[in-house]
Length: 193
Image (tube, rainbow, N blue to C red; front, side, top):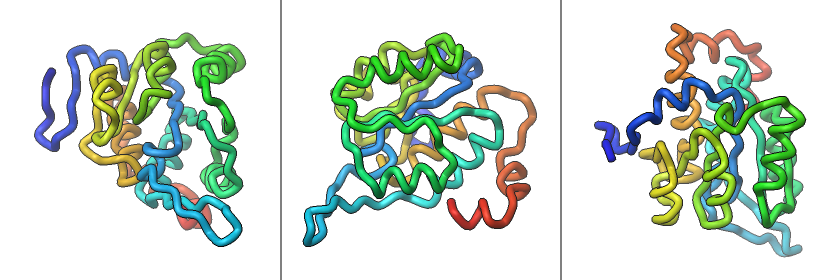
C-alpha cells in the first residue's frame, strides 16, 4: 500500500488502470453525500451534496469521462440533482448493483476495465470487484477501502467525487488542464454545479 502526501491511498498499478477508464459509476449515500439522512415532516428524505463534487462531475463530463449513478434508493431530490448535473445514467432502486453496472457496460459498449466504481459500504463490493478501477471514500467500510485501488483523502459528501475525478482524468496524462475545462463551461452550466 502506498500513501499520497494528501492522505489518499493509491495502490500499485492504480494510475495505469485509471488511464483506461472511460466511465465512472457512483453510489449516492456515503459517496455523493455524507450518508446521513434527514427527514422532513412528510417523511421525505433530505440530503446535502457538495458543490465541489458538482464541479468535478461537470468537468468530467466535459472531458469525455462518462458518469453514472447506481443507488439503492429512489429519491426525487437525488434524481433532480443528477439531472441538474447532466447525468443521464441514473439507476435507482438497486439493492444488487452488479446487474445495473453490467447493463450500463453492455449498452455503452465498454469493457469492465474501462470502468471505475466508487463506493463506501458492503453493497458496493460486487461492482467494485467487477471494474478496472475500484474507488472508495476515506470513511468507507474497512473491506471497501481494502478492495479499492484508490481511496480518497476526502470523506463521502465532502469532495471525494471531485478527488476521484481528478485522479482518473490526471491518469490520462493527456495534458488536459482541468481548471481550464471548468472555466470554459457556459456560465449557466457553472452556476448549477
